[in-house]
Length: 169
Image (cartoon, rainbow, N blue to C red; front, side):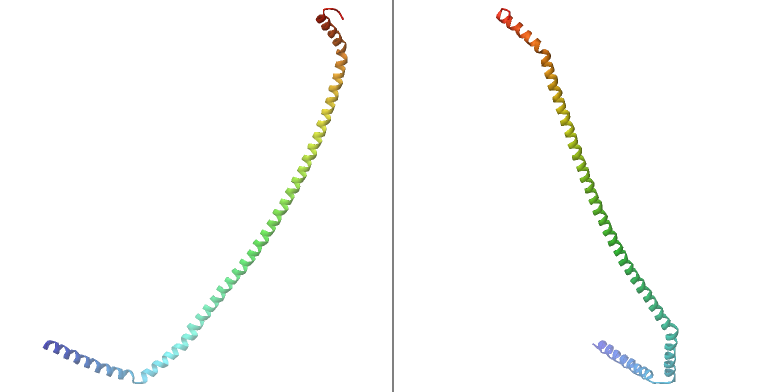
């Protein structure tokens, strides 16, 4: 237990010595002397000098850079809008050309269909005329053949009848 008391008393005495020396140092810091005034003057002079030589040019450079960046971005946005307008115009013209091509294709189809129908009608008429002509030819030839074979038919009919009847007719 004694050792604890000695340790506590030693700690308290060390704390008193340190706090006393700290109090003396704090007292020295709070004194205003010629050196402190000189340091304040140097600090203010350094602020003015650095402001004119370093900070103002640096801030101007940052402003110029900002303006260039903003200007470039705005220019890019304007170009993008122009490109979008050009693309819309191109698409509109392309749609118009497609519609015109579709209309022309439909017109060509209608003309071709009309032509095909006319050709088909003409072919039908020609084939009908040929058919009628062939029928007339056949009828004429039939009539001629009948006229030609009529005497033979009578002769054959008499011959067949006489053979069947057994006497001459």
